[in-house]
Length: 226
Image 1: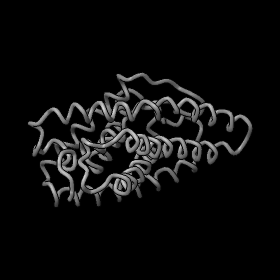
Image 2: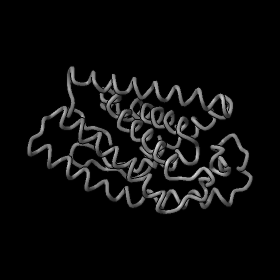
Image 3: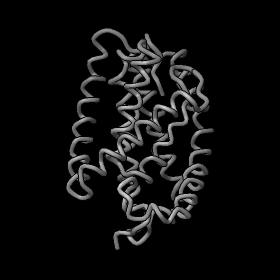
């Protein structure tokens, strides 16, 4: 989901900074809500964990350039289900920034664009989760169908934002259409794989009873709202 350097240039980068600022505002509100509900220590610990995981996802898991961007297995829904929306958002933004500073400084001008591409679909996925997962269901009991819908929402959102940035930066031409199409097709593998990873991780979490009540995971992981 890293927009390749040169796709969006010059003053057009300002839009990315604006959308990233809006995403940061939503993240801040979610973080404040999390502190009020779970405490500052819980938010800090979970954010550090998600940041480390996101950084490792970028650097360790397979990734390759396709068309206008790169295909990554970011596991945004997994992070959201395990740690909550605010820690996932902070971790995605932090991990992306660290990866850029240490290993990909050429990506830093596009940081606003890339962080928007990661965070806005996360917020939409969190809203979807509230609609399709009953309040009486803990996240460790999420079904494959529910996990697939969340993955489609998150990864579909990433593809949509990548397409937007590509057309915004390069115009709607044949080459751009072909590059966006190849990127979207390649991301289908992520859409199919992520729900399986979600369920595997949640199944492991379900067996780790000592995590119940831990500040290291979101309370909803084990405890339903009703």
